[in-house]
Picture 1 (cartoon, rainbow over the protein chains, first blue to last red):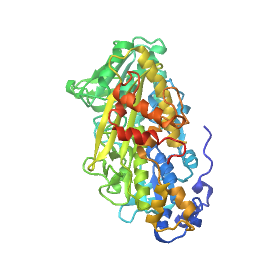
Picture 2: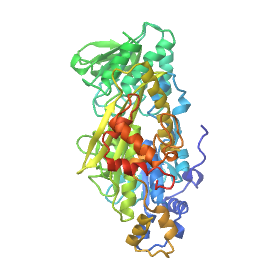
Picture 3: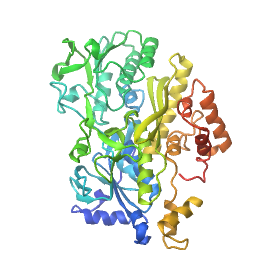
Length: 437
Length: 103
């Protein structure tokens, strides 16, 4: 993928301020031709979207469609990132890393919205003023927050942001992904891998188990038959568990061992420099490669903006994904409380569409369409086999409910799993193209 | 295009208003549910397992959704969604993917 061309901010003068930025934004839409009277003024609303992942990028696209005259600005501090979907395939070498890399400016350009490469450091949720690190304050009529998660460094003793690269979580779409890929590729036969899976709720519920499965696939591809993969879990159950366990028995017998919390599996402490992990059972285990995925909460910007409750996540009205704590601010994606939807890229994409439709309806003084959402997550279990979970959800009386859901048949044979691997490829292509262009 | 006319009326604009072209473009965005179907069923994918629905007649889409709901195929994920759809939902979805439908 080509590097991004200079964005609005990057191409502007170094002293670019809010006034310049808003003037630039006004020129991007059709705003100049609009009469500034009555309801038409609403169509020139300034909408700032924070975060260019699946939720934010999709929301920018559908807001632009529904409110073409609004000034829509997408902000992300990262110029590029790796997608969560297919990230375990990239770790295991089943997909090239370049396949899952996305540039924030490319998404904005594809969707016809303005992009600012900057970090939002604070939001005043009452005045809806955003403070950026390099471009000063921005005022917005509506804010869509799609900031994702932050990892909690106060739970596993001895592990912190500075030393976690020694036990790569690779959970944030950052440089730890290629790092984990390299560490896996360098293992020799007989190695022990430990994957630490966090407590609920967390981003990508099937992710730790797909990671173990595809690592087993990668080791087998290299002819390494004496390696062992332990999943040390802070939970006693996990997404698609029956399916994963049956695929482990079918494809990688004896390679993967899951240690639930009740059997002492939860990781309580780590010595990253020595590759050692202390489990709830009291045992210390030594790993040739550890991937420790810490517990999570909504990105800290959401907490700074007073949008989280005591759970550490952002409560929303599912009809619009509007914050229940502050008017005019919406939260979508992993940071939001959207139970029973999982924290997935597909869910964020679907929430973004409900959010965009609700914002457009409000600005245009219409009734919003019904909030109905979908999710599907495929997990690859080999290069030619996949399993999946799907659900159909709706906002009913202020609560999000599953209207129907299901997983792959437990008794599925190799042919069926192969069909799902083909579907997974199309699913990834469709979801990423819809979200990022 | 009743939706657009109704919207304009509610917005306080006659059909001759200067802002019409912009407002018309802004009018009646698509149903978020149909938009979520198109995360997979789009021209960008159009795979055998996930066809682009804008290529299919409404009656074929309705028939496929009813089949997914009432006799789901083991290799398809569609039954997991279709089980929650009423006949009215299926009727509305079947026309939502036509090229001229609101997106």
